[in-house]
Amino acid sequence: MKIKGHYILYNEPDSDGRKTIYVRYYKSGFAIKRSTGFKVLPSDWDTEAGLLVPSSPAAKRLNRRLKYVLDLTDQSIAALKHLSVNHIQDKLDYVFVNELSKGQRLDFLEFCEDLINKRKYDGEYDINKSNEYLKHIRDFRQFLHKRLDIYHLPIAEFRSNFVDLYSAYLRKSFVSEEMIYKILVPISYGIQQAAKEGLVEDSIASEIAASCMMERSVAKVDNARKCLSRTDLTTLSEYRDSLEDGPMKDALDFFLMSATEFALSLNELMLLRWSDIDLEKGQLRRPKYRTSSASDVILPLGCEPLSILARWRGCHPNFVFGLLEDFVNVNDSFLLKQIRAKRGRRINKLLSDAAALLGIDDSLTMQVARNTFAAITLSRGGSLYVVSKALGHASTAVTVAMYGKYIKQSERNEMNRIITLL
Image (cartoon, rainbow, N blue to C red; front, top):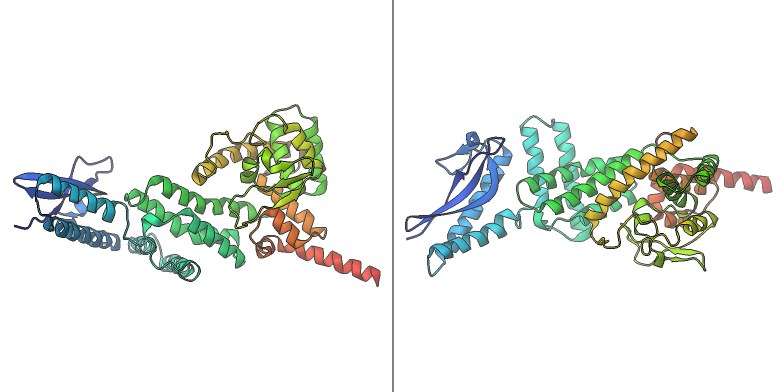
């Protein structure tokens, strides 16, 4: 006799009134149950059919998945030679872990499309917005096909490096940072919903969402491209020198280290080790962070960085500025993003306080330091290739997209010099 399973709502409702969907089998009068991890409102559940009421695209999608996994489980149990309770339980656990809970078969982009259609169905998105997001998903799928030869992307295999690669590709195509964030919105929303449904681990979902949100924070700053003048930098430097050792002086060191020579980001300042620095030769090996460069990038040390490093010499044995503890796993990108966010808020607050006190700008951040380096260097005729390398960009196309107006100013200055020579 074949044993067939059935879905039921089980356990007490949560604070939202939702109950968990369980699958149940009977063997010798003994009920064998297993949670699917999904919670629904009893009003959305068809008890007789053992499925959701198919009232929306999301409900239909979940029903299809539940039916598929139940059929697969029935077949696996029917193939067992010994139908004991323990054997059935083991087979039930194995199939559900591999086929439902971890999202091994469900394509992530199809999942995102279903979510968009659900919001459109519920009236949260109008036609234009839903079509725009669906287009972003199709473009991302096309990128995976052409660039990475990926035709099926299960939710459980989706990682933040796909977001990073796509962002880099969009920058090379001269897409603005603000637009990149908008393009990543449905992807960020999709992975967060997948985590809520138990299809992907929370830590992985948080890492992917952090990559998407990072583009948002960059877009907010880069949209205005705020930068300081040489006079402002001198004022900050003099103020820094007048301070006693403390958090404010440290924050100004970080800013001037980035703005005056080679535009290290806060992430790179965090990862900078004494082993990366050769004070005798006066050079620094750029820490590798979110960069496509396979080889080391060696940068020269000028007067300002050398004086800053002289102050920090001997303070910390490993990481130069002590922004990371020695035991931190630098390969854990999610942890680094958390630390970076915490350190960044504190440093940017100190910079804003200093700028407001000096009457420079009340929104001074570490990103302004990079903008300042690029603006001053390019407007004074600096090499586009060298500046792009100093900024850590994947190509000069990224630099042109972000700081093109300063390059044009440099070209005008060059024309004026040529006219003077004639």
